[in-house]
Length: 352
Image: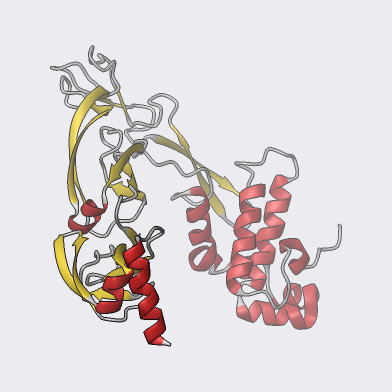
């Protein structure tokens, strides 16, 4: 009989690996070598080997014995049954269920089907970002058949419970893996996993329970939205007796002709003459909510920033509104009349 390999080597972990790392590695190997998934002749032996290794080093007491004495300590103290005692309820069941589905060790099969998602693209303005927007769109998608109400059976008839699986949609087989019994669940071939058989299909949907059609979908684009993908749950392709897909709304915020946005804040450039910047003035600037009068102080320098509190937008992931920042752009004239030149020359002389 070949000598046992080191348990840590079998799982590809170390003595200092965390319980989560050990569990993750076992999950990976169990998925690879489970006989229901791996048809090679030695898959069963590999599966038993990694399962025994996991049963020991995932148990703190058994791990301590193994770390001190190796296989001799474990084999001398525990029988095969002792090694796996409690493992089914404490560790293996959860792992097998997450990998293979309920039933322990085979391919998990879920009768409830999932409809596919749909993608819809739209553009919104900065004003829509401020106020939000109600959308009403007409979607072409898979919808429930209105003739058979999604049953797939011709009106006046009904589905028959599958005699092969007794309506379970799956056929189970129990197999002994040495240390434990595993239940393999596979889709029933007679009803294709549905649990029922349609003897007289609906002529409209051909027994599918759904057909291609149109549906008006209404949803809200919330204030403060950014460019990106947003989900409207259950408005994708429909599937009777299953879970509808989702509608993925791809939003693109259009550039604004006047404003730039950074999160909740709005930025706007306003031109003033160098005379108005020097003497001060009152200007009227646009905001997303209308016009606003602001004062430009005498002696304002180029790129002076004036804040309009609360004149920005909201953000979808935070509270309150941002601000609008007005940048003063001082225009220096490129052409001057003789009189203007004389006045500026006189100003320069008196300012020295």
